[in-house]
Length: 291
Image (spheres, helix red, strand yellow):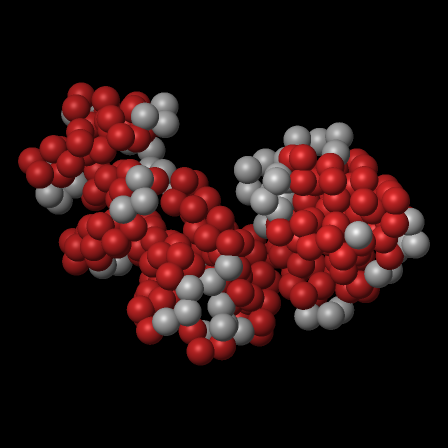
């Protein structure tokens, strides 16, 4: 599993936080600490609450998130597996269990345990999507799983496309960008660029549409002038935490310049990318190759 899958499942964990109203004061205090990013302080409060009320699903989910954020992945998985016994048809529990398994599989890399966790995570997310088909996040998680996972773990571009098409039926803009990204990875950049242009015709400053176009174009070595224009526009817009950052935009500008025969401009952008993200391996390799 790659870093993109890990990033996606972490966003699932963050984004599916239930709204809690009229809860006991001790639980509200723990939730307030969690939302204030004071996770080490929140965790023992959730633990005490779950010990007193072991059937409280929301408290269990928050405790599992604390464990994940504090790098206690296996504890989180065990807690969520136990929670599934209490609520086997709860889509939120299934999704968080699936996300936690995929995250841990990504950390473990290749191996029997990683493959087992990847399959369990996939199956849990598939069940959540089947039980609650209108939740875009579940389908997006499955798109990124199927596009990145090895075939032995169930990876499949056909299944990724199927979930991306479901996203498109629920949220046309997000679905088009997911499909564009998939087409680019399947060596169909023209189709990818056309979908991005459709989005940009209505949303000319949509960061992810701009970046997705540029990624497809610079990888394929086509429409490079257009890609550079869009990447410079990206640099004027703050990306969200789930979007490629400005280090990525500078790397793509470097790639466009390099493929356009401007090595000095390429070096400048690769260096800027590394100023923003010193461990960015693609920029490191690209700059070393130019030297």
